[in-house]
Picture 1 (cartoon, rainbow, N blue to C red):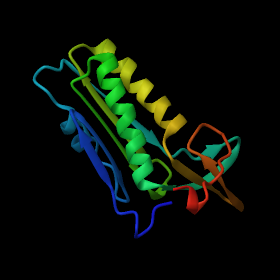
Picture 2: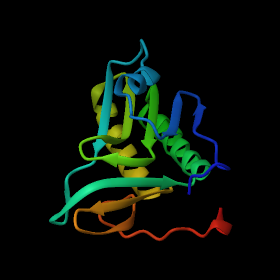
Picture 3: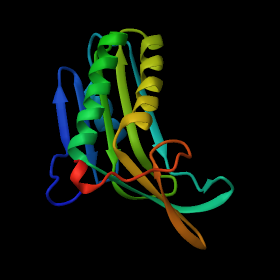
Picture 4: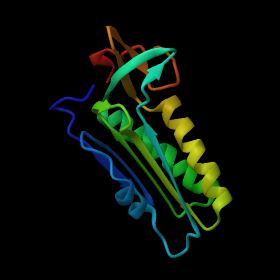
Length: 165
């Protein structure tokens, strides 16, 4: 879980940049992280908070993470995808804290010489982040108590004990 002792917010390695923030996400800034004169394509994915889940009206989402662990996992995903797809750059940023309806919680940008590799890598980056990155979300519903979930589509999450960090 993010706290004052977990003050690592970004990592960069060999054309890959990952970050966590409590601020609004900036699509232009993340695209600039992957720009290259060798790239003919930049693909940007923006994940936003929708207003419902399983027929229930969502008020907002709240995200929390183990910063250092989440950043290491994100960076590992990016490095692997860069090599696998011949990418020029990969950048992932995830917002923590409260994310209101229609605002972005994650941005993923990839650049590649050709669009096909960028498209494939962008989708794969999202799926791997949702599957592996140590980020949890609390869905706050109108009129009922919220629920913590893994940052996967519909999967209930289990928080890791503080000692397992």
